[in-house]
Length: 319
Image (cartoon, rainbow, N blue to C red; front, side, top):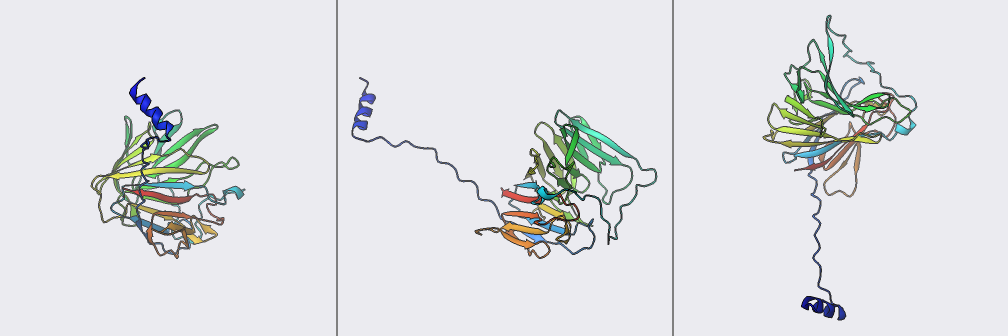
């Protein structure tokens, strides 16, 4: 008989078995805390992005942004998405005489279409951003839209304004609604401020196989934004930052609208403070800012404007 087998049999006979070394599971990395500043100001105008939350921590190199269906989505029978210029000093300016709007298909496959829009005329901040996908490259695009192909037509669920770096996300609509409204916008990368917050790109490349937008920032550094699978509950993007990013600027900003709880794209802030045992909650205009490892911006009551607009969650801050 083979000697190791004899020894094993003897060990089993006296009730001893040598311990088996198990692989030790690595604990999940601790989320980083970020400094949140609330720069929101009051307004009477429902088309004014008066809600302004900025996020800063030079160590953060990755995080996630999610657009989640609001708690009231199941009760919405008639949605309200039309512009509302009541009590506004800004107006929906008509196109310049002779202005042309051109639609450009940057990419199309079996499931998704990436469309750009180019309009002759000016934008508030001049830009030479190049948007590229494969062999197609375009400059001076005012708007870029990502559509999901669905029975009966495509559905736009993500938009980017290349000239100022604003992104918007929305989930898929429930079956009884043709679409849901956009609400809160977000910026990722070195956020500067002029007439309003903006992120300056030098170029943006879309890689359709991975659904990744690659960005180079004018202030230094690069970023990727990976688009998740949209559903009726939520749609998310994973952001990664790299290179020589400025350390004195926020890495992300949320912009939204609040007049009253009944007329708002977002009305409340909930956040996890480092070491806290639960979430904290405050009205968005009273939120004092502070440190957070996650932050939610949304509503718990219906709004008469952009009723179906999603809530927004920033989470998974990491190195």
